[in-house]
Image: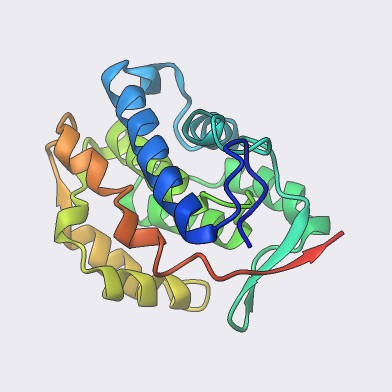
Length: 201
């Protein structure tokens, strides 16, 4: 069964295809309209705005904190009862160096604040911080998908792998649309982060 959506799609594979098409179009608008310039890098409010913009035509919950507990395999993302506090703490984390920025990115992934679309939104959010703070972004075409997903799974315990993978992919091409769009490529999220267990509250 597909998540409840504004498109009236009941098949999850069909929804995934439409979601990819629409969210990519919206992500391109974000880039072309320089909407990022109005956002504060590293704040959850900016991530909410990104998520809402990408998914508002698909889900009622776009830009809203999830109302379910989520787990992936044996890993449980931040429990709902602690989620808002976790997000407040992430806002306060330093972000002046590459290492600090990735640590903040890892913590936001653990928080997983939205019901769906966390990966795409958070990668855009990450690039916004990197661009503002160190004048670089991740060239996702240089990131091996499987290595990335495995490193992200292990990052709550040990973040050295994800730091290495992302550092090797840094580029000065901060205004490249091609580099930017690769971060929300379907392959990075569909195969790695769609099978969630949820607990409705």
